[in-house]
Amino acid sequence: MTDGTRRIIRLAAKPTLDNVTVTEEPIPTPGPGEVLLRIRASSLNYHDYLVVAGYIPQPAGRVPMSDGAGEIAALGEGVTSWAVGDRVMGAFFPNWTDGAPTDANNAAISGETIDGFAATHVVVPAHSLCRMPKGWSFAEAATLPCTGLTAWRALRVEGRLEAGATVLLPGSGGLSVFMLQIAKALGIGKILISSSDEKLARLKAMGADVLINYRSDPEWAATVRDRTGGRGVDLALDIGGQSTFARSVAACRMGGHLIVVGTTSNGVPELPLRDVVMRHIRVGGMAVGSVAQLADLVAFVEARSIRPAIDRTFPLAHLGDAFRYQLSGGHLGKIAVEL
Image (cartoon, rainbow, N blue to C red; front, side):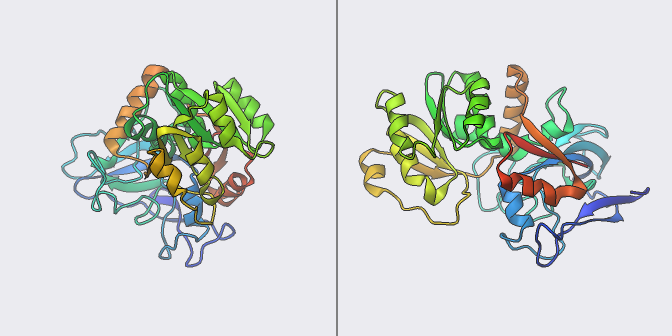
């Protein structure tokens, strides 16, 4: 990169993991109410993979990646809330600053409906930014805007869980690990399911209370209920869709809560309607959260000395390889990208 230019990834008209390339173009100038960020790191989310691999169609030239952390390089006219050099994070929903989600504040999605953070310099609205946790690296901070915030909102905003509650978490990816860490800090019981005994052992070392291998125990919902004294969990997180949805419902207690934040399965799940109705299960979907909720999360991780688990870091030029590693399922925690 030379003076006045930025390194950037723009997706092809028919993107695949094999045609993700870094190019150079002029650094943009922030307009009124905007700031120029020097992006130092991003992190991978399954949503980003769906965009980069072409499963969520985009116009040619879209800049992917919904996470970004860096420092402010320049201020646009009228921006007084930030200073050059401030270490900040961008937002998944840059216009959702506070309050309830609406059609308007959820319309702009970084790395999907608008350009994201796969560039060394980006221009974003000043109101979309949140300060980084003190003492964190850029790679660590880049794990918070999507995955970290989703974990926080699921547990505290939507789930409203307190000490003594129980939560069921699937797998060993970034979201489950973040929820494990937050739940541990809150005194919430943590049941984790995975297909890997080796990963389950590592999750136990991180504070998981009950561990279940769903391959060797395909009726794991019954095991969850047994390990909770027949009651079931207060909150279950589901990301498996067709392959896990009915069991996640069965694992919930009477009046429990099932939150869906996406799916790694292509099939449409069958709704076990009788169980949902007769056991008063609340089933809801949610996507990430607001900038105000991200600020609450920053205060929480600082107060509780929580740091994210980063499995591996890739350079921007190897973004395709980073997603291949994500798809391999070999990681525990987050995968970061440094710019």
